[in-house]
Amino acid sequence: MERELRLMKGNEAVAEAAIRAGVDGYFGYPITPQTEIIEYLMEADPYQRTGMVVLQAESELAAINMVYGGAGCGKKVMTTSSSPGISLMQEGLTYIAGAELPCLIVNVARGGPGLGTIQPSQSDYFQSVKGGGHGDYHLIVLAPASVQEMADFVELGFDLAFKYRNPAMILSDGAIGQMMEKVWLGPQKERTTILPEWATTGKPPTRKRNIITSLELDPNRQEIFNLKLVAKYNEIRKNEVRYEEFHCDDAEYLLVAYGTSARVCQKSVELARDKGIRVGLLRPITLFPFPVDPVNRLADNVKLILAVEMSAGQMVEDVKLAVNGKAPVHYYGRIGGMIPTPDEVVENLKKLITEL
Amino acid sequence: MKEVTGIKEIIKPENLAYRKSGILTDEIMHYCPGCGHSTTHRILAEIIEEEGLQHDAIGVSPVGCSVFLYNYLDIDWQEAAHGRAPALATAIKRLLPEKFVFTYQGDGDLAAIGTAETIHTCNRGENILIIFINNGIYGMTGGQMAPTTLPGMKSSTSPFGRDVRSMGNPLKMTDLVATLPGTYYVTRQSVHTPANVRKTKKAIRKAVQYQKLNRGTCFVEVVSNCPSGWKMTPTQANSWMEENMFPFYPLGDLKTPVDTSEQQSNTVKND
Image 1: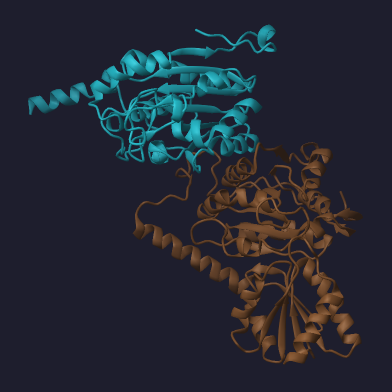
Image 2: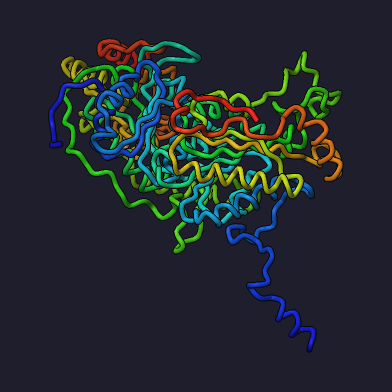
């Protein structure tokens, strides 16, 4: 299967990209607004195409633990869900992080708390980038802002997950999952037959037995393990920061936004510049690691920073930490499944400028 | 000098009556005296060795007393979160279908927190072996009431005995999974006498061999004791188990493979 241009929903693009990336297994459970992913996979019959296993689990709990089992075998395995389902998966995710297993989780987020709404939201930011489950750990978090990135980040997510033996998450939302855009899909890749040496594949006589576990009763040894994780996260912070700048070179004011909010803010920047307001946009592509240095550097030259997000103010905390007092940092957002309009963002920015 | 030579004469392979399975590691087991776990571990190790499965076996250990099972058998292991072992095993077997995959779980793990995973794994007929150790109590956390605790039985969370009116009735998971079309072989055994050890070994061996047939889930319950949790000596515990556990959890096959013509009808046989 060759490189191909298609018109697809974000959810469908993730599914097709997974097959083409040579993923070994998908384990999922239906939940709006991401159910098209498992529907697409069942329809596409990837077992016939590549030998990829697709299984509908009895719950998100089972799905994430199937991911644990498959990842423990060194296979490329993934699951997808939306916010309430991702909450259920937090137990599995902390075990996966503790056992240092690579895998990919896609959250097509919706508004909460509780059952909340099925409309798009970015209110799972804290849960995604600060750990989510118990214990000290991080996921590698990628934030797509287009259907193209939904597709591209499948492979990027797996590359990073295997590079660091760490779970990776694509944090999108219902807007990106549901909207249709043109998307370039890569050629079909072979599923890998070479499994990592740490994987449980049945112990050959040539090696010691492999044990996938996150249990250590001796606090001295657990601390050593925790420090190893800390070192890994620092390595990820050093090497894997990804972000995009939009009109930042001459900016007097800076917007920081990711995903759907960044798409909105891109238009806001254009509208503001039409009115002579020199605004730039920094779009974090990795939310963990957060682009701390780029935000800090831009803070030197701007009068004001506005974090725009579809949450009650979550990413803004990381922006403030990154800016470290160099410039005033404000928040604007819509919540509960509402999406801000480009005009709304400009109006709020103008109001803040007059208050400077 | 003569005596030493005598011992050397005796220590010869042809005189060997019994030896530790090569699959068992030299790690000292943490189990209490009289506990059925170590015996069941030994049986499992012997079968894996005798069936030549050391290089193909992938075990999933639970949360509970047998959480450190991965230290005792020299095969590849994954340690699951509490109750989730069948979900792990499902994915392992589907992604590595030629391997021998099994879970080993206690009653709290399999019949309380992991009930959904147990039932759905069996109902899908995943080609794995589930070994279920039922001693009617949470051993690791110090003797709390389990889903399998007998009516009237005392535990630290049922100090006046299990009152079924407020605490519910014990759950017979093995009877339940035997009714599911996905299970191929379901049996209940014990390891408290040499005769029962032999029967359990026969049952687990059958289950291990059946996995090669790809016909569904094999489920072996071992009704066991917990001298520490039950606050009894090992011999008292075994007598108590015979008198109280076996009438409620009768030993024997609950579902045996039927021949191909009958197989579609999913007949449940009770011995």
